[in-house]
Amino acid sequence: MTGNRFPRWRGDLFVGALRDQMLVRLRLDGGKVVKEERMLKDAIGRIRDVRSGPDGLLYLLTDEARGMLVRLEPAG
Image 1 (cartoon, helix red, strand yellow):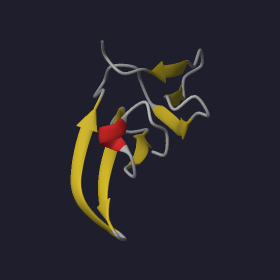
Image 2: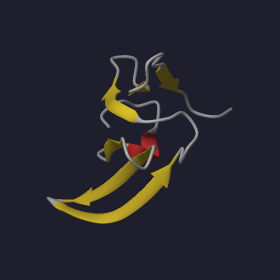
Image 3: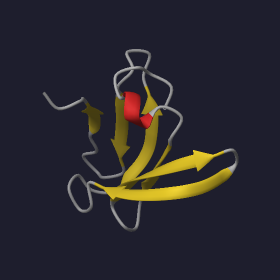
Image 4: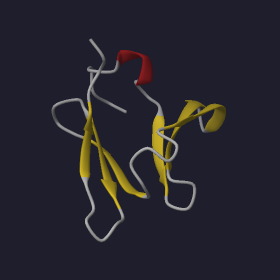
């Protein structure tokens, strides 16, 4: 994540999980994963793609017949 909208996630890697239907946040230290957080388990379906937008928000694309483009925004 490179944007400034989620400062605690800056530098983290986000991966969508098709089979497990979740978003995975990986905290990196150099090239090594030091922490894993599983998010949105079974909440929005199979996550095909994850991108950081130019607006600093996180965008998820689901892999369904009627797929969704989901924008994650900070709470509050």
